[in-house]
Image (cartoon, rainbow, N blue to C red):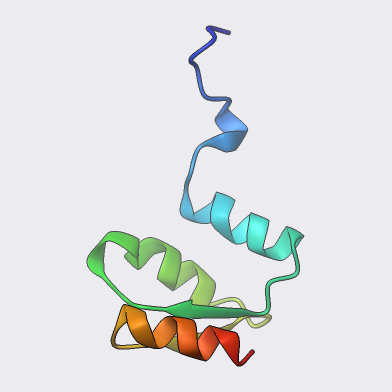
Length: 68
C-alpha cells in the first residue's frame, strides 16, 4: 500500500463513527443538526443505546456536554 494511502478501515463514514462510539461506550451525543451530517444523525438517532441531545447553537453544546 502506498505510504499516503488511507486504510479502508480508517475511512470516515457514518458507520465508522457509530462503531467507534459503541466501541468507546458513548451514551450521549450533543448534536447541532445540519445537512452535511444528516446520514450520521439518522444512524445515531435510531440507536436505542444513544441519547441524542439537540442544540440550536455550538455554544450551547459545550455547556450541555459539561453537565453530563
